[in-house]
Image 1 (cartoon, helix red, strand yellow):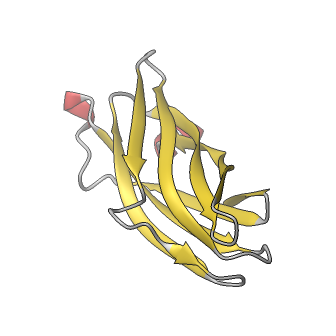
Image 2: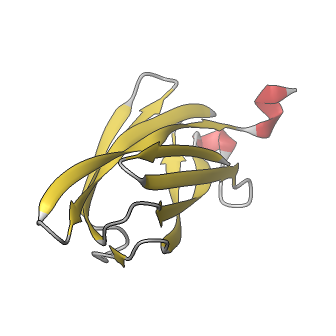
Length: 128
């Protein structure tokens, strides 16, 4: 699991390759990920949106933007956390993702960005 802390918000990510739903003969590589967002600050915050860029080793990249996460504008009290799972499809067996979340401090309605740790997607057989 990789972790990054920005402005008191800790983002941890774990990834794994999904061979059951991938098809290497059609260049379809599925990677699952689990993200945990922890509020280690002293303020209540609300998740507003995300913007990520997904890079594929064949030179393709996609911007992924959305309001909230999984359709939810999650509110995190100090000391609380929120976890969710999802997946990406790549056209090659190696890729990476970077980006950020935008959150808002509830006390003063001030928005701020929280960096996502840079995530690498590599099929296990490439590591041998």
